[in-house]
Length: 318
Picture 1 (cartoon, rainbow, N blue to C red):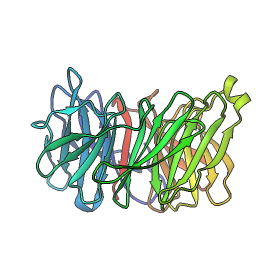
Picture 2 (cartoon, rainbow, N blue to C red; picture 1 turned 180 degrees about the vertical axis):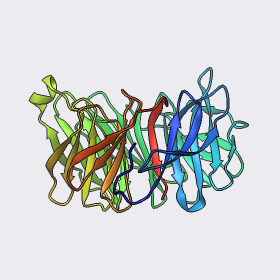
Picture 3 (cartoon, rainbow, N blue to C red; picture 1 turned 135 degrees about the vertical axis):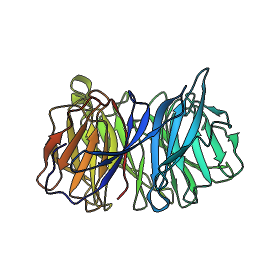
Picture 4 (tube, rainbow, N blue to C red; picture 1 turned 90 degrees about the vertical axis):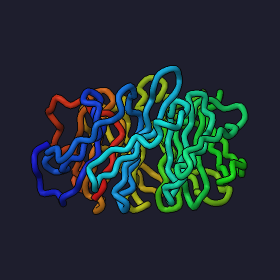
């Protein structure tokens, strides 16, 4: 990725071909360090805890089992902390603020709590009549998740003790979950009676979600945009990666409306914003590359050209 007038930042990326976690300079794309991942596993997801310089990578192994690899970025060392702890195949992953507890869901949508201090895994029940889990987040100690249902989706909240506190029916089929500024951003694709767009749900309380349509139900049937991930730096404006339309939708969260589209010309699957909110880095499941996006002028700046096979999970750590 060529250098631009971008405030310096550092990226964490997953290289499937090299079987490693990469630490890279954001503006230039130069790889600063590589952390090998445990053999016999495939990387699934990535979460960074910048203040502690720790990264966590969920892994899928054989016969439905998985693991969790904790990486000390400061010491430039990888510790496969969860290899001694057999985990179900981790589909979704969330980390508590104290970094002593984590949560995963398995392919059936069942929620599991991981005590990282004593290396134990406890299965919780999933919400009734739900299928796969599309996203997890921990907000103020509560565990939030979104699950697919036969007619759309369901948002559910659990206590740290595993008690199901409340649920909320979603009209569309959820494809992800991002927590920002006390809100849950839930991109959704078309169900039997919905279009596609973004649901905005308060993390606390039982208020209904605000529905922001990117595509109406009639258009979604023939020309789906498939929103898959939302990101926001300030809780005021959100950017939604739309895989099928090869674009990013710009959403005013206060007004509850789409205010523009950033056409990229290729599919993107996940976004990560710089701290100043002026730029985004997008990854692509289809192309295994990166795109640097100018959010102020709403245009792509550069795409990577390299031999790395980059997975969609990424993080900006400074």
